[in-house]
Each structure stands twice: as C-alpha cells, then as structure tokens.
Image (cartoon, rainbow, N blue to C red; front, side, top):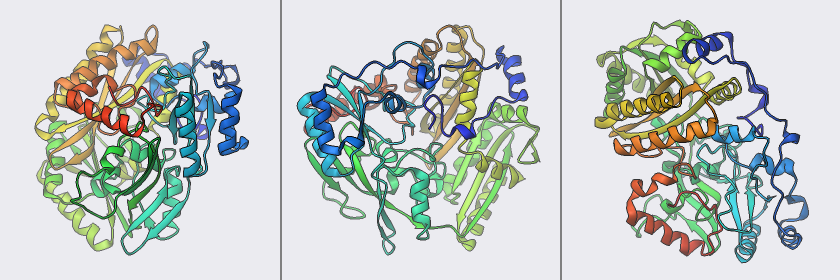
Length: 526
C-alpha cells in the first residue's frame, strides 16, 4: 500500500466536481489539494538498535530479511486511520519501528521473541498494516527499541481437507491471495471486509474481523477452527475438534488479542465450495427505522441473505448528490438497502424469495439488482475517497459500534448528535452518515462516516471528537468496537467494556504468555 494513503496508488482518484461542490456548499471546504511531503523528505527518528542487536537478529533470520532502511521502516510506522495519515504529512521527525524483520519459520519467530525479551526490545506483529485504531503503532512503552515483525513470508495454503471443509492458511496471506489459492481447488473462505485487498489471515484473526458477507458466512472468528500461536513462553496449537467441552476455549484468548499475547502463524478455517449462483436485489425504505425493522425481521426469521445492509437517509442522500442514479437506477431518497444471495441455484432462489417477501411486508420497495451490483463493484473503494477528502482540506473518518435491536435507534441518535455537537465546538459543520453493516438475531452494528472541515490542528480536532463519541457509545449501550478492534485508540474505554476484573484477567494472561511484556505494548489492555 501507499505509505501515506490507503491501498493501491493506481486506484486513487481526485475529488469529482460534484463532490467539491457538495463540500463547498455544506462544509465550506474548497477541495483544492494540499500536497504532503514526498517519502524521501519524511524524517524518521533514528533507529536505537545497537549493532550487536542487529547482528543477533541477522543471525536468526538472515541479513536479507532484516532492514533498518527508512524506506522499509516508514510503511510500518502505523496503520491507515485518519490520524495515521495526517501524521504522515508532518515535516517533523516521526516515530517508526527501529528495524523490520521478516521471519520465515516458527523457529525463527520464537528465537526473535526470546532475543527481544532478553534485550528489552518491543515487538509489533505486522500483517497488512490496515489497522484504523492504532493497532500497529510502534509504541516503545519504556523498551529500548521497537521491532516490526512482518509476517508476509507465511503465505501458503498449508492443507485443504475437502471432506471436513477445512483449510489451514498461513497468517501472512492477504485476502485475495488466500481466496485465489482456495479458488484453484474449488473453494472459498468468503471473508470480505473493506480491508480485504490488503489485510491478512493473521490480522483477521487477531482483530476479530467481520466481513461484508457475514450475514451468510459469519464473522471471521466464527470461521476459525484452530490456531497456531508463538508466544515468548512457548507454542500453542489450539482447536482439536469442531466442538469441545474440555474447559474454556483457549482459541478465544487469541482471537481478538491483537498481537498482545502471541504471534499467530497459521489459522485452520471453515471453507465452502465456490457458489454456483449469485443474485442481487436493492431496496428502498421510507426511513431508517422502517428499514432497520425490516432487516431485523429478515435476520430473526433466518431467510439467509449472504449480504444485507442499510444506509440511513443522509448516507443515501449523499450518494445521490454525487449522481442522480445508483447503478443506473433512479433512486428518489429514503434509505437504500442491499441484499446479495450466494449458493446453489435452488437454495438461492428459496432464500431470495423468502427475504423479498419479508422486506415487502416490512414496507420495502424493490429497486432491482443494479444498485446492489453497483455497491458490490465499489465495495472496497471507500477509503480512496477518504484520502482525497483529507488532501482537499476535509476531515473524514469512520467509527463503528453495535448494540441490541431495542437500543439501536437510541445509540444511533446519540452518536450522531455527539459527532455533530463535538465538531460544531471545533468550528466545523459536519455530515454524519450511518449504515447497518452487520446483522444478528439480537442486534446489529452501526457504521458511521463523518465528514467535516479541518480546523486548526486536525489531529487534535479529531482527538477531542473521538473522546466525546467514545463516551457516548459507552453511555448508550454500545460496544467500543464491533470489528475495527481496540488497538491504542480504543484502549481508554476497555475498563468500561469489560470491567476491572476483566482487565485483571487479561493482564494475568499477558503475564503468563509474555512475562517481559514485549508484544505490541500500549494496545488492547488498559
């Protein structure tokens, strides 16, 4: 990925005239690009690793798999949140890992961890670098240096059990690589988060990722059947059977552990045959409450769409402001919903018919398949628009939460109002958009996108807003994160999320598997 933006530079696009006009009219933002520094002009703080440290690391992984070059340190200096990307524009010295190491075996990882524990060097496991919550920030936390442990060499389909429907995938495989390896054998994992093109199998597990097809295939943690984890205290091979009553499930300690407890090297996952048929249908609802009730009805009766999501009035209106049609279909307002169905022809037809009947009964109007296909075509591209907005003087960021159906409207209102009020306090009007991104029988997730004018120091501007909205989420029955994870950014709210005793449990696990505390310090655990 580009060092100071999201994804593939070839896919980046400038702001359209329609978007510039919307920014000017609503936010007073010109949209004119202000260029940041070139990569070779960015100043990184010098590496603090001693020559003896570097020689010892090179002896483990080989000199060609160890680097202290700024060109290698800079892309691993953080993730892809808005504050991350704003920091990259700074002309002041920036934090970065002191070295990058790319181990090629579990034995090398174990040896690196042992060396770093002995020499008080922090280790940040690194997959695709797509974290938007400070999950890969090179936080020193009192250690002598910080090492980025890049997992890209763990990139194989290790086994495929076609009888059981399970595959073992290397933790360093990016989403497209994993799906290509499985597709060559006629199978699919079916995990498609917005970070799909760059995030890795290990990262999906370490952050409890949830993909856009979760209504049909489940969250990533639901797909996991087993894990191999290297910790400073030893190696764990977890998950012996499809289900077990042999005490607490230790896999759950490492799913969502964000590299704090160990380095995930391989994941055994449920897979399914490639779908033979795919059907699409978009819907319009008069308002968000009606649409949310419709999605709840579908999920609670279990009609089985693979994808189902709902944009609120503002998100739908903003999309329409940029074009009077979505996927070639005239949409006249309200709230847009998308459904997708995958599987064999008979199953897809039955599930689609049941879902359509439920949505019609709940007040929906079918828009045909074109808007749903248009959504799928651009499903991974929203971060590129965020990059262009930041370059054009707008502040753009996302956040997400989840709650029960009974609390959904109240949580949405509280978060929206807090965002608008907090940004108004900084002197900026705002556009706050929301959609239901994932559904469950008992509740749903809410995904917010906010656009405002950059005011003063935009990192500080957003920090104040983020603090206010985090408090609002916790006060109104939401979780601090549904699928972005905790990282450094959400850590201040973890005591409220899990309680003081829960925090003590996490610390006890940390002490057991990582006594020196070298793994990803400053993340997850309060």
